Image (cartoon, rainbow, N blue to C red; front, side, top):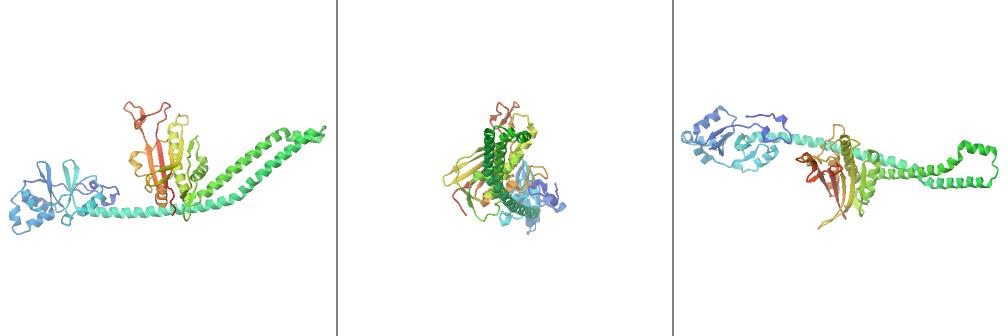
Amino acid sequence: MSEVSMPALRLESTLLELTLHDLQIESDQLGKELTKAFTDNPLLPGAILVEGGQLMGMISRRRFLEHLSRPYGLELFSPRPVKTLYRFAETEVLVMPAHTLIVMAARRSLQRSPRSLYEPIVVEIEPQVYRLLDVHQLLVAQSHIHELTSRLLNEQTKAQMMQTEKMASLGRLVAEVAHEIRNPVNCIGGNMGFLSNYSEDLIKLVSAYESQVKSTPPLVTEIKQDIELDFLLSDLPKVVESIKVSAERLTKIVGGLQNFSHMDEAKRKPADLHECIDSTLLILHNRLKYDIEVVKNYNELPLVPCYSGQLSQVFMNLISNAIDALMDQVEVQGIHSTWKPRIEITTGIQETENSNWAFVRIADNGPGIPPEIQGRIFDSFFTTKPMGKGTGLGLAISHQIVTEKHQGKLNLHCTILEQCEDDTPKTGSRAVTEDCQPNTGTEFEILLPLGLIA
């Protein structure tokens, strides 16, 4: 008999963590021996019947005592083999592997017929090794797990509400800041043309004076030397041009911040996905260090009905995760490795039999995601990042935005580096390329329906 206290149960707890009773008797043993076993151990829910080492069935304490309490039952069954009684008390036997989740086992147990609803469950520990589980304990364990699930769900809901409110507040703040910045930025950008023309006119005037005045006054000559006029005339257009380029870039950044801040849109509006992606890349420009190559394979896309601010958040989460994965790989490979970090963004239209979809694929050549956790990456609070670095909500919220808010799909495709028998690294059936760059990485595919406006 093995026991584990109820408070130690988890959502993934299995039958092996519950109290399992071990009472196996041969079918030719006498009924009085089974009576003695039940008398000596009042907690036994039943007995497992075996015949020749093979499972024959199970007889519960309740049915055994029920038949023995009938008129002449004790005299009839006590001196006879247990299999005689089993022919009268036989019911359907529910056999489940020990690794079955408690919640799944409880569901299957409650699906039994009313006659067998409270019968013990046979748990197969390993081939031909069986134990008995009291259905009452199974239901109590399920109740504990239900309470745990409710508590975790409440915590997740609160955390998600806090994250949503945080993003909404951040969006409003960014929108206000971007609006305040836009006015001086527009002033600078609007006057750059005039400044460029004025500087060209002044240079033209100085050149005319130089060509027309034959004798330069000493004071003018001294000032020309002090200000290095020749260098000034050649450098001034470059300075004006650099300010002009910076003003244009600042205008794009402010536009990107405004696009990203559209978190509280009331309805879908047609938006340019390429513009959303470019705005996100502009905001993340400072993180694209260590020469991370960003490859944009943009194909023709129509305006897609969407909540552009929320989609920008999805792009932000996915690209940020790709950057984190590549940064971790840079630390492993070293900055002098022949492997070079790369993010590839591909867009286009995917045609199906019944509908058309706009797709955005964001792929990196990082280490990939282990197969054993790929099914959990969209779960709330699940993260592989160190404590304090990841909240475990980014991908969960991204999945919710794509699937629930846009009726789209968010798919994961991943390739993991494996090892050949001769210790040569490979990925699946493909070996590492000649320049030692393993073909690994993670790709997230966003599919958005076209022509659907809610």
